[in-house]
Length: 242
Ligand SMILES: [Zn+2]
Image 1 (cartoon, helix red, strand yellow):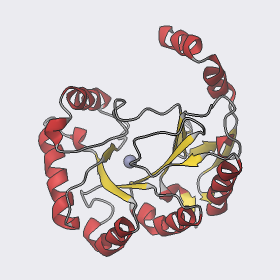
Image 2 (spheres, rainbow, N blue to C red):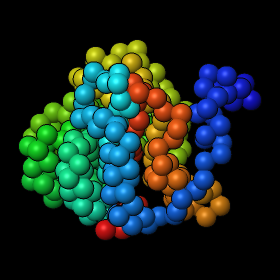
Image 3 (tube, rainbow, N blue to C red):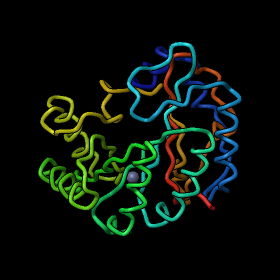
Image 4 (cartoon, helix red, strand yellow):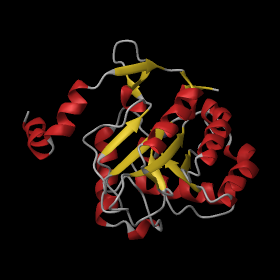
């Protein structure tokens, strides 16, 4: 209750927007909707920032594009999404799991390294908090990433398991206290590096049907966003139909 009240007081327009926003459609989303989104953002004259860009524009809304690669279908559809990004000169961040449960990272080594050559950020998508000793697992995942792809990742994002959120919270508090010890230089999961004024994501979940859906923010930029603010476009290519 208090946190809702706090959000309302801090940013009433954002609070009301989130409360009233309309559902657009359910997954699988046609890939054309992704192009429409990039076109809409271009028409709104946003600044598409390279994912690792630290300095933000004060004159325009800063948009960062990130793809979390959760499953085989994500890898399968990634190429089409990256091709669209390229048309709009977007240097996105791509974040990969390393545990080979649904895709084998090593099978895609050459393709991933080519994306890196193109200037895209390639980082770890960690799920280390599946384990009680999450810092040990985080290091193991990082080592494995380096072994398979041949370079040490500089950035990471955190996979949502949907459970063990208490352990996930502990992991974040260690990162907050002692980020340096991880050897990483950036994560947008840590607010001291970057915070977002709004996140457009393709992974909202209908709690009854378990189906993923997107809001109409994919069609129209939320009006409360102002120049100088940060917007994240977060997608998982597996929810799209190419
Ligand atoms: Zn994920």
